Length: 456
Image (cartoon, rainbow, N blue to C red; front, side, top):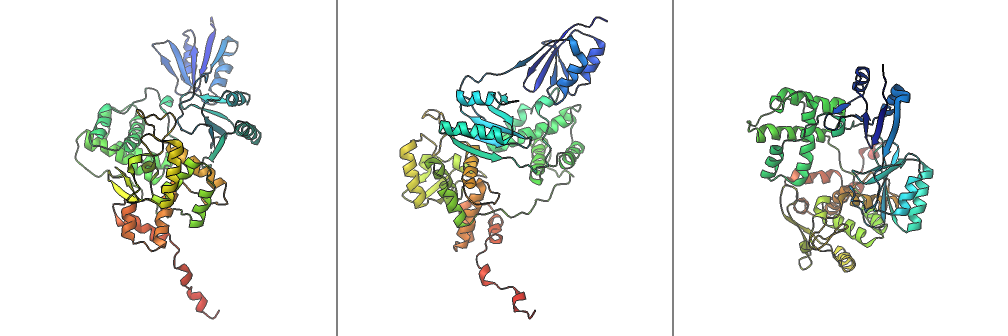
């Protein structure tokens, strides 16, 4: 048998194989997970999974004429999936044992990354990754110090048991969300964040049944998919609920079916009390935040009890210094409300405004102009808080939303009526606000355990 040479090209997470047609070779390639024939360009595409390239090298051996690894050169400022300020770098230690480096283009830093073994550039997300080691991390930190940049560091939850869903690249003939589904969401005036959540959830449902036409999907498949999310993906109760709601939207709103209950095991929501900070801990975090803009952001969130989405959508005109109020427009539930404007927050906002001069939004990201204002990144705010907490002795697991919980709890502890807190937070139901009565420790020092009165 005439065994002709083969060519292999590696493009990030994809391997391209060019070879002459041969039945034995074809059967081997078909045995590689999710391999597919690209009819238009006449080559095989194989996902670059761990071990795939090694199996191909072992099988084809000396028949491989060349292996070409393509790199996307980083020649322009990166448009990052995680937006951060200039002269900042965000480093994330991932569950897979790598460090993710996100920063604006800098040749010196990029050259350092390229000296580290097994570095990778992700052209889609615009970030670098390197293997985690204390040495590599120290090398990067030294370079950051030389540049005078600010380091933001965070770690992914190493204990997460959630199995990630298959990406579009992992699935041959991946089915995209129907355009009519997205149009109906927009027609019903669902928020952009809800649309961003529903579309990938519904796509995951569609692609879980690759051989069933969308019109053939029904209640049986909804039950099966829900079971898969719980037993295989091990997703949270809230994720499962949102997935079911995304699927129900298709059957009831897009197809126009009657509203019905799907007999799936809807999870009981975990009743966990939110973590809150003491007033002393909030003060420590704010004092540890030296950057004026960053401090203004955290102070605004805490002093007004804002959600992170509400903060990044605040406009300059929403600050009413005469009435000492902040107007929150089209918040969760598409409702407007007013909340508190602290005098200390107003003072730092005025200092910040003189320095930064935002155009439309109160806090704007890189590249913002009067004609094209850019909202500040929600992810960057999380990194700011993380960096400030690391400078303190606080060991609690907190997020930006913890500041909102702390605001409500501290108001309650200072004697504010629960109805006013409900209004300031924008809660539709008082039951949502009542959760803070279970968190506060005010008055505990006045209660004595009955054991103390026993003769034991």
